[in-house]
Length: 354
Image (cartoon, rainbow, N blue to C red; front, top):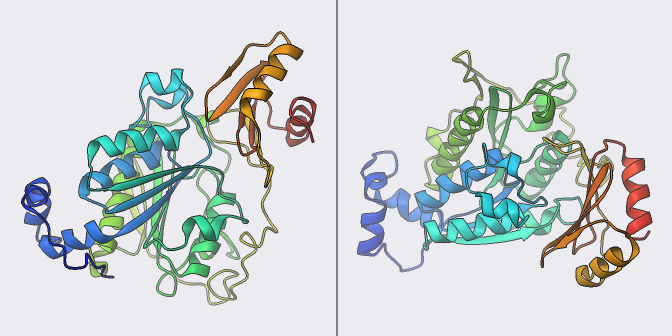
């Protein structure tokens, strides 16, 4: 994999900025120029995504698109390394807060924030045209959608997950390696990452997310620097509390639904449920092709109820005890305080409209 800078060469400032990376024999000047010409899209900007994005932008990644549906909260700050208390107080969308921080870190990188949910209807548009996809998501439904889209678009992607003190990552290259569906589906003992545990039930150590995201960023750097021969091509897992590390070679399943038969169930929209979000007792509701005037909605809600309504140009938040609702301009809502999609839909219809 090689990318072109046109006739542009690194200038003196760039050579100084990336000098220690250029000195590393695995990258060198040519690999650094490849990185500066390369692009990646990060889906999910939480514990894994913030670490990976920070490392990649500092390494000189030319273009990074960040796709995230969520906003910054105080409970994020323990592990989501691009955010500060002020971001949580303002309830900034994570993609927006990350873009601001990353632009200040390295002006060589073109960083683009997109505040939206990755769904079958927009997956190919959001992911297409990039050299690589980085997984920063928090649920397997979205990861399997990423997997379908990456295979359909023939784009490599790097799966990662972390919970408690444990994390796992696997680099997926369509046509070369097994895919996530090979790993999760149609096996006698399909792989699971603590299926009964989430960040909400088991918590998470920031070090676990940091280790896995660093391995993710290293694999991304190998590919985008044009050094695929350095890829480990194994499922890597670690437990930072016990100090146990393991790597397993995963073989392709010739009858795999996704990379074998090219049956893109998740991309076709046949398997996309409401998603209970990691780290909170919450349900997200997505309303396609809907646009809301948050100012008008805020005035209406404040007039109709005694609930405190907070809003900025990106979102509106209000409480309906015991629930809290966050509404985005594209019609999406995060309903906190329930794991029941029916309750969430009922609250949405009651306060926002069907």
